[in-house]
Image (cartoon, rainbow, N blue to C red; front, side):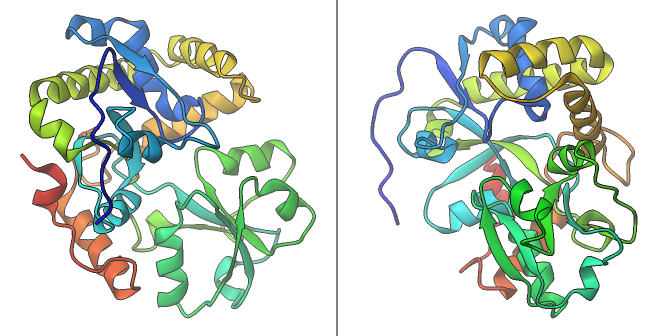
Length: 302
């Protein structure tokens, strides 16, 4: 089990999203800008990760108090000995898709060269490939566009709220024939949730509840005021020098908000589903990604 840093948390409450500034984190930006964190008595600093200092590195080194993670990645990290607690689940669905060049169905391309994120967000895709006997050759990337555009790979993983729309803006046409949505084929495992290190959570439960409550309020406000939310998102995008555009961020926000609605209840529930935790355990353990079950109770710890 890796040793966790014993640094003292001091000063502000530091939140580090898992990636660069985008509408993917709109609710947190809203909570900051609209004073929802302040109303809970929290002095929050939103610090995005860098290439040299990832969100999980900051969490492990006790430099940040909370981060966002997709469920499968959080479980994989916990299995490696880093205790985490889910304090708020924002996504109710899986956003991963495989896109291939026009006219080619990803499921007919056995042994295909498929792009996968270097950052480690492809657990569900790897499990699907093995279960369906596709035996994809996974090609890691930081930015997949050059490889895909030049035809160096046959297909690529993409997030339905991010890379999928970026490729469309570049002129690619996607149809039901060359897009595979995992959520539509028995692999609907929740994406982003809000996580803390267990040791911090156990000694700061009241603060964790306040941060989760204000963050949820930020997401609820974002769903009701999308254009004003986009104004806030673009402020953070510009501050963090991210190359994007308002049209892309509008599409991203719309898709992120759609993913927050549970398919069964048709409501934005903000909860971790036990059935999806069970499904994630089954898939990942059968593919050697977990040594043990990460239980629903362990994830919530409350």
